[in-house]
Image (cartoon, rainbow, N blue to C red; front, side, top):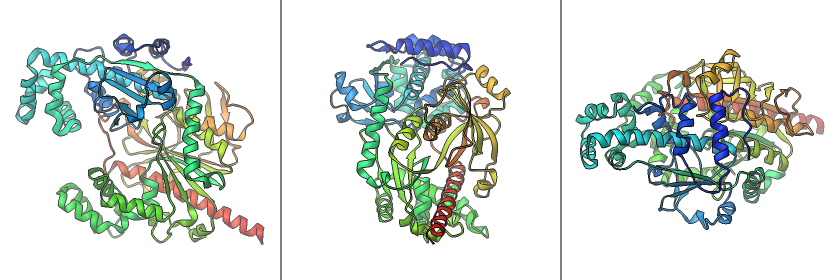
Length: 574
């Protein structure tokens, strides 16, 4: 389970990785306080003020949103690739424990109610993500605890926190800006007084244990994940496939037209909820001659409704509408948290789909035998494991299309970046490839941002594992798109058409791949902007603009490719 340290990593990050992975070899809990000094020494862009006595609120909020909400109750975090691995180490029936989730990170975790948190991991990238996030949380929680403990009793803190008139006073005690306090209040909402009391009452001390770090366990977990898909949707192994890595909402919203049919109900919900800003935006959309933005707006409102009532009438109706069109959802449930949708192109209602998808000749899709496998984008190296497994089980794969979020060093939030060069910090390879997309295929559907094509991307090992020196190396070489999945995906692509495993530390030309590769990243972070945007847990209405622009471009590309394939088959048959 030794970790290969990227050659471009700074000495501080290299020291952190070597320390962390040497400690993870132990069979007992590693106390996070052992890692606090080396963590602070990284000078991470996400945690630049780790050593200061004053709280680093951007790092604290970032970690809060990516850890389960009960993390303050946890004394031991246990990581394993499968339920079988947990059982082998004495954690029987982990799946019987209550499931706990994070707002801004998908990972299947279970809490026993007695201080133990068990998390299923899909690859080494999960370890690189969980470890620093936990350490950052513990450092910042305990900073805030010490400041509150010196100033007030826990019950006094709670009383002060209940009254917004005390916000200035609380900010002064915590040595933070009122702006930062407002961000924390937004994250905790009506639980803010309770959490402030907890912060004042006790520090946290968390231990971390890795049950198994072997590559074979990751392969077993991925095989079990795929077996569940093949059992639920056996057609996936018998038909041509377009592989998409995106999310679980945008493609089906575009393909079913469900939200568009429910426009009256969705706007009625807005009026009842009193969302004045959104109602004004809707009125502006209605006043436009082409009603540009209508579809994205309705998709956003649908998501808002379902977040407030996930088992409600609209959610049930949408599930029924998808099933009627033959769209199969395959939840991962007992495996790592990567859900799947299987979409049959010949069973779509072509009259109901989003009007932006209606390319020339699209009625020919009714004669298609192909399907789309859409997965909820994984984290880091899990992308390699998953695409490699799918390529073993499915043939032919007609295209590989990746949509994901990234940090940008030269753009702003909501921009869409299209790379043609990807440096992978896992394999140390630099991949050159023909991206199926150009700016012209995305920009017509992007209302608020800019499309930046011909970019250079770097796939990093973890979000915390970057510092200014590390970023400067890439920025000087023209790399401005920072993400985690493109490199691992391209390593899998290499093995899909070459008879050997992907190389290491080489420049790799993928121009000869016999299928399309399309990669689109939308900017969700600007790390050189001191992390003020890192508190965002979910996309706003404006944030969804880039997501749907990328999704429209992907589906239009798949439709065009499939129509061309159908026409070619017809010519050959006649």
